[in-house]
Image (cartoon, rainbow, N blue to C red; front, side, top):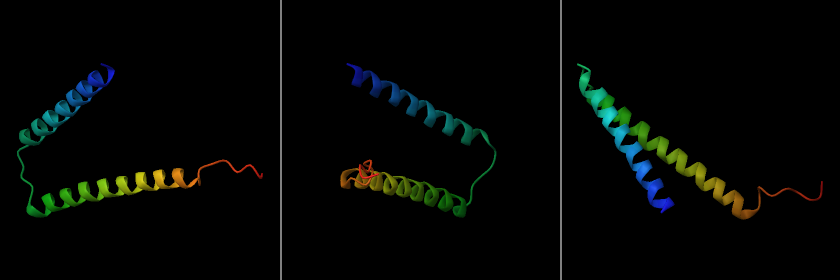
Length: 73
């Protein structure tokens, strides 16, 4: 039950964020060139790749024991 409530709340936050972004973008009387869309797409993709890579390093470091406290000190 708690997981279902958490998923519902997170889905509501996501829907509200998407709605706000679409409303904000459509109310502005400007257009974005192809270069702007390309820059936006590359920024999103590279940010997700960087975040995923850093999280992979966190899990790798934790599983290899690099984060453990050294008892020899």
